Amino acid sequence: KSMLPGQTGSAMARKISSQGKVTISVDEYSSNPTQAFTNYNINQSRFQPPHVHMVEPLPYDAPKPAGHTRFVCVSDTHSRTDGIQMPFGDVLLHTGDFTELGLPSEVKKFNDWLGSLPYEFKVVIAGNHELTFDKDFIAELMKQDYYRFPSVSKLKTEEFDDVQSFLTNCVTPWFNGWGFNLPRGQSLLDKWNQIPEDVDILMTHGPPLGFRDWVPKELQRVGCVELLNTVQKRVRPKLHAYGGIHEGYGIMTDGYTTFINSSTCTVSFQPTNPPIIFDLPNPGNS
Image 1 (cartoon, rainbow, N blue to C red):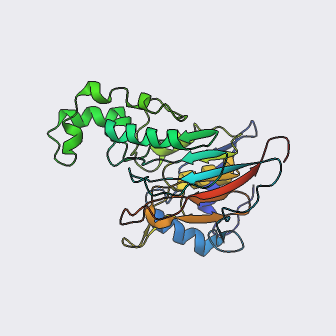
Image 2: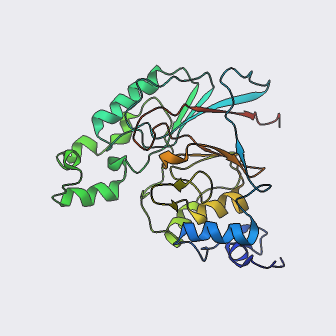
Image 3: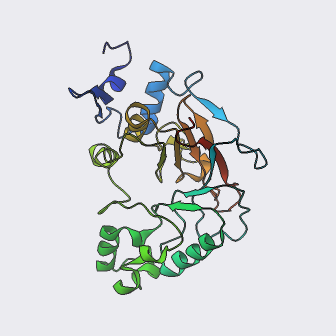
């Protein structure tokens, strides 16, 4: 593949192996997403029209096309589900931070809420606030006199050892040994490399670079460059659903993948961002 001026980082990040598969390598701007965003915008207009567009949410009363499945996306509900008006749909996707701290009582309350919802399938992943779901993190936490999470530190191991089992009203995909906070670069890329290529819908807790990942208070982009390159250059799902950055709520597209940050809670933890619906053709109808 020939390189165009200013494409160094992009070309470095995408290589075709001898088997014809795309492999992603660590981006040269991996550790500084704001710098990465600026560089790719200046040199490639990567995050500007016509390459990307904002998308208006689909109205809840929009008819679902024949032969389609309607997905309902929520994220970052943080134990504040009581007032959320949930729209009609077939499948619920919750992309993490359904609790404040991952306390067993919070997980059980969330599971009860899931049980009250009529969706045929409910798929949930954990976020960084689900502290008890990260076995390595919680093991270290229990060794310390940890002032930051006193209510977690008071838990006995047997109270949270099998906390995922409380989620009986959903499907929870699981990576063994998955850490929720990893250094940018190779450590994260190793996790993204576990994503198979024949994926229509990808759920992560955090955003890729440049797609609803702006934190105004810090004047920074916080999305992952390796995740972006994995999504755009290797996996190419039809939908990438996530949350994590409350300020980034909304929808964008690069013309192939639709990126939905469905954070329910605002930056001040008010659960006022509505769920986002998305229709996809059923396999065989596309």
